[in-house]
Image (tube, rainbow, N blue to C red; front, side):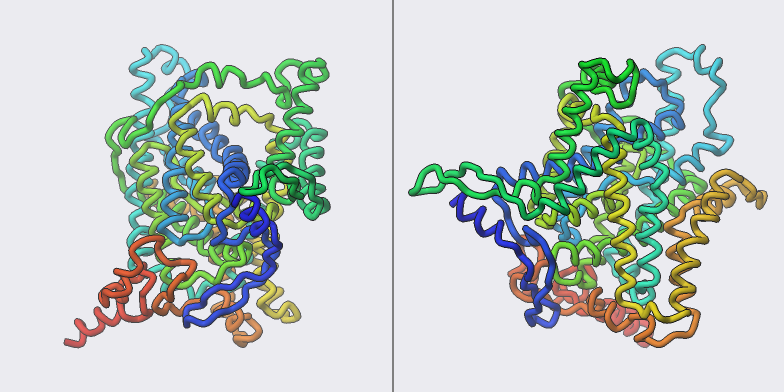
Length: 576
């Protein structure tokens, strides 16, 4: 059975049958090893899930290192590791909910830089600025803890309340109804700017040791692009035949994991040989104390830092992060589906995905992670590199995250990956994200001067504006909450780029063919019909009951939703 499962999975799935919303079958082509509905053997799931975990961990662990100083925490505060564990625990929980009952795509929901920007703006307000260092040094441990927990409670309340917009807007179809205005010329700058904006983070990590970083992305390029079809002999057990030799595509399935292991081993050799001076970022013994200080077992829980507090300034500031994440996730859904050789996500799946993401951000706020949740672009890029788009793999990855969030020392092992290796991975992953964003331009006419103008301006102007806004605080309306909101909005490149692209594409005259609307409508599958049997985006359980109940066709997040029925209810009430 194991051997048969491997053979089925290893067949190159260049064509995946998928049910469209009309119940007809279409062939969705894609060069994937495992499609969205495929179930690899459990032992392969573990290793492939580990790749998603390792891809996620480098980005999510970086967030508390920016967040904790803004909260006025000490460098040696043991609660720093508890915040990291909380973020990873919540990431696993929401990722499982999203992949199982949400949009049902193999995406990872985790902490995001988009929420760091409004977070820093809120903590920069006079009421929340850190006291002078001499004042902090004179405080007792209890007083020092009160300083940062009060700020964490403010962030928790702001994150949870602002995310309610995404919850209600998603589940009730308000955001989905606006998708007709989210065109390829909106998607392209929004997603591309995620990768382009993050180049500072990739450069900062890779520049700590360019040799190690270069070795990382060179190996990853060789394994994923040049050796994808190279197979190695491996021993497998086959029922009735015993041990047999199979040819296993190691480099195609595990390019990220192989790269990390090899480069980590090289860093270890250089550390032992004394080639790297003490304190060098590439040394493998630099963060060993993280393992020593991490608790063996700790379960994060809601309100662990205190009761969340709510203020208008905090909620309005965080709302900018929610809006940015909403636009970004809408961009990722069709991209991820295409990469997994899955059918285009129907309207009910998009509504449910956005609502579940909002629910995840509410839970992240209540749990006290200090951040929200958003679709991880790094893991979307990992799907493109590994050609593994199985939903089951991401569910296993979610399980690993939950376990790591509970067993502190287990996660600490992966946290000590040398930073130059992470930088090398980012160079590839962020580039993949930008490339996938630009791939949306395949639907528009690139010979049109109108389209070229929109593309160029919506990509370049946000980089100019946000770079300037991040170093110049010139907004002064007399209202500090409004100043913070405007500062956050104008400092978020993905939001500025998406809005500029959307506005220009919908205002500047152009034909539907020129704008690529007809092809894009087929890709996005904006019409929502009743779910057919075995549809990719059906719930894993209970579909037989849902199809019997007529009232489910009125709910925008149900697989049986029929477009227009929900809004028709309000029209009838108004007419009567």
